[in-house]
Length: 154
Image (cartoon, rainbow, N blue to C red):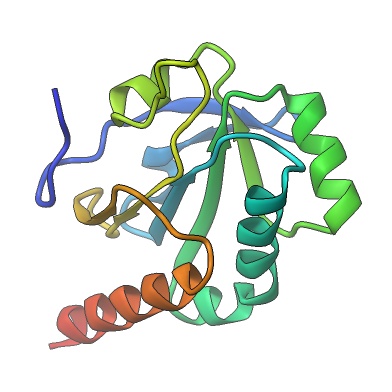
């Protein structure tokens, strides 16, 4: 079952790099969520993508948005990645591959696709980036969130 814009985003419960359980529903009514799937910790493209979100976190915070990165790597792998690059948001471990599967972001090889979902404060998918190009991605995500924020303010 493919997800589409306008669908309710499937809730999930995954642990972040600190072993803390994060649920998508924790943000309902509070924050927009950028849920980005990526193939592997500490690889060139994934590092650039994560560092772009890290460097621009204040922009996303101003837009009432939480950044959540998801891969099939372990919590320990995420912790090393976070420590090495001083990442300032949660990386979620989908080592069971269930969430990547639910979101249509699982490669046949078993790793996650590079895909991003913009989920609004009501838990509704507002935008899907099915084949992310790392360079310029944070800007297009910001633009989508700015438009979403303007729309919600009337």
